[in-house]
Length: 546
Image 1: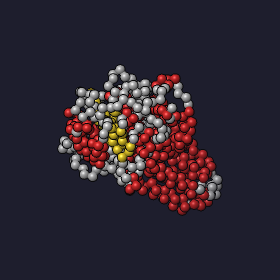
Image 2: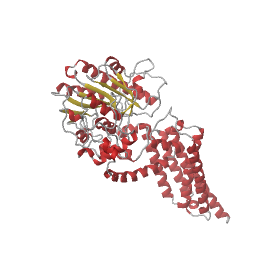
Image 3: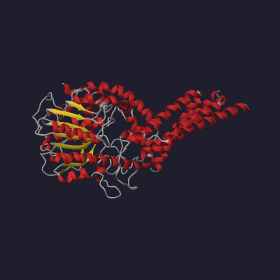
Image 4: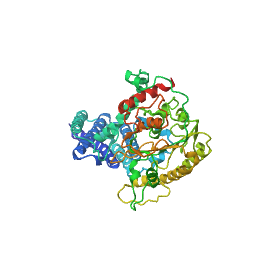
């Protein structure tokens, strides 16, 4: 090899190494900004770094073989977009993007605000490293684009080293645990990401989800198994049922978690004084251990579970893809029913209001994209009940505890016990508790509420499981309960059959896939995992329209 050829080859190798280093730097930035490494010990971090080094070396090998500057820069830009999107989505929702989440983003007015608040100047490091790579490649274009004689051999060695690093990381991953239960309890897809901490591996998983998402619809026509046929009713659900004696007010509090109900600020002020007082002074069914079961439909899935007794789709979002289906529901027991919705044009409410059995929808003016507040939602609720001429079912959705947790008039003072995000969240919960308390005080003395049933629960959690975090409350106040009943633990799907029992509708053909929490002999008809699979099949087949 001549001196010039050797020089070009050395520059070629150096540029490839620098390019791989830039990719590795992007991964390290992402790791630090998500702070997921706090859940890993030294051995686990070693595995994570080996996996990321393997990915960076694979990129370097790809650069050695392609040698097209524009292709490499394009791939780096795609990498930046993916990393930034996942970073902001994780900060807002403590979950990572998948195909189902991507397809629902455009259906959520105001979604960009809850994500955009997590934009930080440090995120500029991603495009800046790509810009640095561009100038580097352009500056040494001749050395990079002219193929040295040894480039193929170098690429092979890079590939071998990438494989060795990946195999070493995979071996470590196989023999150690990668989650600390005291800190994290996140979905399986996040656990897989956490183990390798490879954003590009997660990108590949999302592409696989897209392919599966296109194919899974073929499963809708699969016949029900004999076991499944024993669980679901064979008869068509009745259009009418015995009339209830009083109103039903079903309040779904956005992102409400049980730990907030027991929290206090630095001065000893309760975050939820009104709700706690209500529980202490009224006979209620109460549980602070409700495991929510939403998937990527979030609030839309919360409505589906609580109103129909079904669980979310395994892929996709039911209210978007199958919003017009016929669903079993609680609302058709009532001669009048309405949804009080604070955010117009969200989660396909105009369609699902009808399919979940409600006769009407009340929401702010969608033409001006106005958003309601919890204060307004409870004012509307009181107005509807005062003017009702027959027993009425109201499903009330709140909004002020939605991320990014911007409370207009914070009144609590917190110390370092809670993080900045937790403090902002608790301020919003305190604000909602005040409005809820005023409504409950009115309900105590209003003549129209003497035979009413009030359910207070959450559509979903917000924080990953950590101690009491991740669990949601359930409070049921009804004339049929004369002393407080405490339920230590339950699933969200248990609410539907419990309410059927309290409403005197035990003869209703569909009891959901949970259990009646007030009957110690009641059991769930199948496991939670099987319940998800069966629900997916029933929704895709529009089973209840038969």
